[in-house]
Amino acid sequence: MKLVPHRVLPWRGLVQPPSRAFSSTTKRALIKPISELPDRITPTYQQRPSNTLLALEWPSPPRNILITKKKRTPGITASLVEYTTHLASTYPSINIIVEPESAAEIHEQLAFPVYTYSTPSPNSDPPHLSDKTDLVCTLGGDGTILRASSLFSHAATVPPILSFAMGTIGFLGEWKFREYKKAFREVYMSGASDAYAKLEFPESEPDSAPAPRTCPEDPLDKPLSYADIRGKAMGSTRTARILLRNRLRVGVFGPDGQRLNSAASSGDTYALNEVILHRGSSPHLKIIDVFVGGRFLTEAVADGMIISSPTGSTAYSLSSGGSIVHPLVPSLCLTPICPRSLSFRPLVLPAETPITLRLGDKNRGRDVEVSIDGKRISEGIGEGMEVRVVGEQVRSAAKEWCGGVPSIVRGLSGTEADEEDHWVGGLNALLKFNYPFGDQDAEGGHRWA
Image (cartoon, helix red, strand yellow):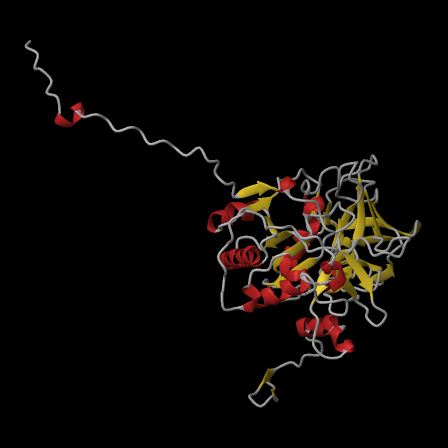
């Protein structure tokens, strides 16, 4: 067979251009670990003689801001991007911390890096989070606030929480999201002006690329550097108000005495809302021995028992017939769930009174569940299991405020009494006490069927 010579294409003989050299510059990381952040700045809470709420005072401006949001809600995700962009552009020295899911979801939409933490092991807190976070902001409902609090469930102190009500239940939310610029500015500047005036500010801001301003015409969007706040704090008489919410200290122990709710080194778990012992999927009522202050109280036969904090008194405990307790009353609420005996009524006890719930040996079914602020514990629970609860200590021997969940509440305009009325007015608006039955006509009267 005769070979046909291969025809050389005209462009193959040309000299190939040199290959393009790639840049050796390291690509900027858009998601960074929180271990790189500076240590946490811890504020103080001052008691005013004429106020029942505490005053928030920063020793220096907060830098590391943790933002949590309601999951699987596109509208709130867009609000998160708007909020973080505003903070990065207006407060250049602030570092934004978000949850791992949120970091993966929004980091490509931002012109600045965000920080996040690694997924914690079961019954433990995210590493470094409590040591790095100055302030927590929540975008969502009460469940988002509870989830934010649970990130510090093994920490003795929780950073202040600034909550924006964007969910379906709003007992704990204080601010509307449209007020986020004003709300954050008040919190950021809260404290005595002389403390800010004595700060030694850095000569230059961090070299991260500034984010675009969200609204150049808005004065609250003006970039604010450390030098700008010298002597411009709100002052000691215009501090942000803090409602310190008491938590529960919870220990769950198996029949063999082994701790089930956390690692042995972590100790008790702190709960903002409640701890629940429930029959779960079992069709049988549970027989629970109840001890108060170390003394036997009763053998409860019920679907379960609830021990709630004053904050949790408006949750499952309220639905089970428990009392509503003001969050400033240090107490524990013991509420049975569908008890067999109608004479077993809910109890309100002093916060320092230890309560023990023990699963008795008379139970027909062994299945039972323990839930701490919505996190279930099902393994290792059986006959002889104990749930031990006592109120958290929120004031040290030196009379300094510690512990609890510092919730930043709205300050209303008007007299001092009006400013302390946020809980009463909010509760009435949500529960609608003595709200009339029937439809109202256009003139405010009632039409009865």
